[in-house]
Amino acid sequence: MVLASCGGGGGGSGHATDPPIVAQGDTEARAQVGGEGGTLVLAGGSAIVVPQSALSGMAELAVSTTAGLPADAPVGPNGLAPLGDVLTTTPHGQSFAATVEIRFAMPAGVGSERLTLFTQSGDGSSAWQPVPGVSFDQTTRVATVTTTHFSHWAWFELPSDVPAAIPSTAMLDTAAGWAYWTRWRQTDHRYEIRRARLTPGATWQVIYEEPTPDAWLRIVARGPGTLFFLREGTGKLARIGVDGTGLVADWGDVSGLEAGSIIDGFTTATHLYVTYRGDGGALRFALATGVGQRVSFTLGGKCALSADETKVGCGSREVDLTSAAAIYPKYMAAAMPSGWVLTDGTHWYFTEMFVARRVYKVAYGSSDAQELTTESVEAATAAIHGTTLFLGEESGRIVAIDTVTGAVKSTFTTAPDSVPNALLAVDDDYVYYGVNGGSMQRRRLADFGP
Image (cartoon, rainbow, N blue to C red; front, side):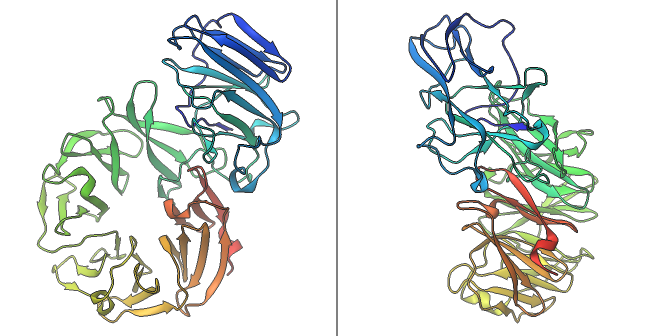
């Protein structure tokens, strides 16, 4: 069970003693609340708890429940209807100097393992989003979370195989069954790196906390048992074990690059490569020492590494890592590729983004790129498994294409405004994709055909 709040949610009860009750009711409680704080309580246990000094002046606050989605709320995630009442805290967008506690009763007869609690951003008009970090009282069946904004709150029952705590921006290691992502903490303005298993009901753990407030982190690459990430303002890459051990805070020097210019990173058995915008270059770091150098060939763009680690496909070119020789597919003279390149061990796969938006394949060592399919696709991301290429479109559609024949095996539309472009990965059992609200879901691989 995960709880969500878009305006700075996360964490359980932070108030040892509740301020006095200033209003109570069956389905609505409303009161003027000032710097002294106050508690507004509904029948069944739902409430808002405003601590002392959270408000600098008087404000009319309200908490209410309604059956079904309010008129100003969008359709639920994946088109789902809420279970039980929807909790509304108003005014939408109200901000506080200290975190306010939201308590929301769980719908009767439904176990917490089946539910995810969603909310919206401060103005109540945007997509539903889940928030990790919830305290749940099994006796009272009331969930508690802290936030600094008011909006709608609702329980949704997602498919039982959804690891809902993982965001769509995560870096997935499907072989090992882990997800890694960064998150900013509202409480102390610090970034952290989290990880969670790719399993139902996954719980996350923090493996790194940035000591400098508001200094963002970016995961650049993952190697065997290791994450490499950039720390804002340091000009350095850091290295840490995937379990949070063995931190080297100043591992590799990237001070010559603007932080926003880094595009991608990948590792071989001996080196970390970092590609960047500008001259389309790359930096290569020895894994053993962290010593880096600019390589003599340019890569640029997202990259895919061959299984034997001797070749890499990046952007518009294939590069032999042993000789630095580059091969340029012919079609690239007229168009640039989109942000992904994949390989199945013998071919590279990519799409051009300006003309017909076709998907292409080219054999290793060849400059003759061939159209894989004549269907126009707006694939922002992709994944490959065996002889199936999965394309995630901004429309919310996932397309499965046979890499041998070019035939479309199947399509699946996740939901209106969902975002499989934010994440797409595959293992032997599931296809993982981002959905409306920024969370991750997965669908069985068998659903896309043989």
